[in-house]
Image (tube, rainbow, N blue to C red; front, side, top):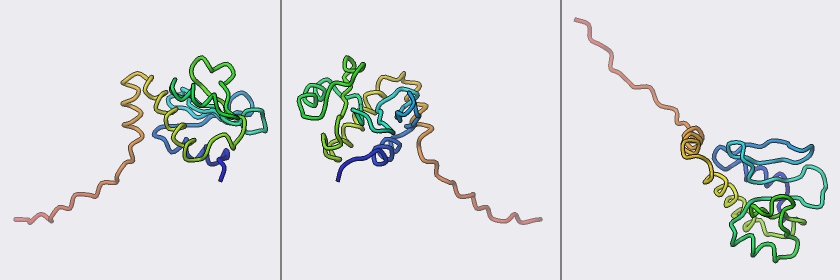
Length: 136
């Protein structure tokens, strides 16, 4: 089964404190603290998904069919997928997680800590059960 925009959206928004924003008309960007880690298109285009990757993965991925250095962002190790067939879902999921983590790691430490603190699921505390007071 091939990845699609809905699958990418669900995956990217599952990362802690990740948000989405439509930018540049018809591009859906995924962000951590307003820093973009992935971009997909909402209308048909030559490139359907772009994301940041490690220098090692950048070199390996851009040798594959259907994957090119991302226009304007290649110097920052971003790749662009020309087709949905370029990567299997499992590999793409790992690469999108890596992209998120690479961008997150560049955020200031205080920002990282605040994002992690705010994204932890809150557990509902049970009220403290107190025994009734005995009146003298």
